[in-house]
Image (cartoon, rainbow, N blue to C red; front, side):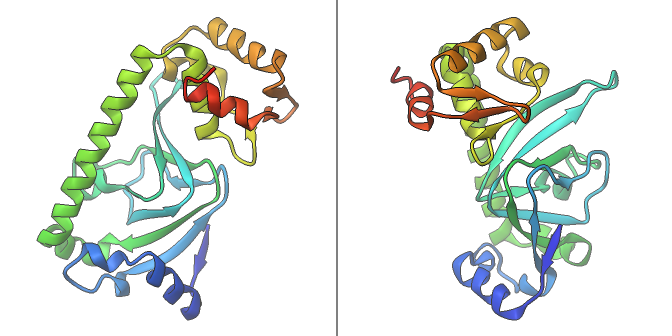
Length: 222
């Protein structure tokens, strides 16, 4: 994690992403800007977070470790969005794990210093209610899509969502569970993408050779 402290850089971010629009008090004294590299942890699973993050750019994934050691993907986070809002509200004390898929830039709000002000700020609470409602709608849409579209479409969309620099390297067991398909079916479709020249299997993962074709499949056009 890199913390940006240069005043000019801070002012530039605040100009283009005015976080103060969501608060009725000055949030800037409690806010810093942080950058996470791809695959770096944003929220450590099981910890009580000290910050509420606002994702300015990048993509991240939310996951949960089961008692048997199995890891389950829960959701994917795309900028702009909040990270850690459930812990702020007290809906859960310990955080689920959040890992950056691509390089991510976030506002980090020190909730230890301003939690009481945030939870009594009607302007922020209205924004938070709208954000949670839109998040619920998005989850419903994703569930419906998983029930309605063939695996080729859903996997293409998943690869586009989770790849970084055209490299896809998610674990097959986690992906098959998330998409609700068998491990064997998942491998069959991946092999078909390779056969068609859309993906290339490498030691690092699957490289997207034909981005246009993959997007067409994700849109249900092929």
